[in-house]
Image: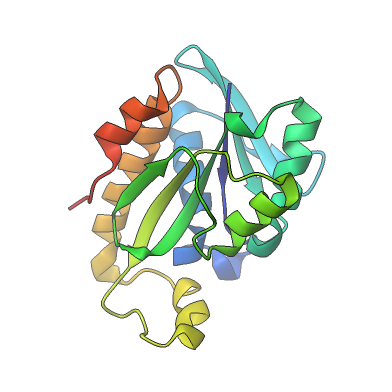
Length: 192
């Protein structure tokens, strides 16, 4: 069983923003494999289906990015699952646009959504897929990064983002019946 959690912020004003690429990837997987993602019992959207011989559960927390751990904890407790069965999909402004980094564990790397999950579940022992969102338009000043991650991708970036989003979907589906290391070797790359 694999729980895939795409991080983002709910609401129309956040749709298509760099920070919501986790939501976009979950939506793309849902469309690709035919999963209806609907309201859950807590503050999240959820859907599930058997894919490639394993149950795939897709989750979109509605707690806003900085409180993502609350929703992830609710889902795992409700299903009686361990955090190690979870794959979290996040944006990463430290990585060039279109770069995918699949890891088995790690720190938050300064990402508030990952920090919330680590805090609420008291562990950083969970796989994550980081999706690079950096661009030449990224500000040098740290104080302006919030505006950057909450802006939408430029028209000239959309083709690259769509290709990388498709590769991220493939990587996640690839992790279902196989070891994570196999997917890491195949998909940790820059998409151009």
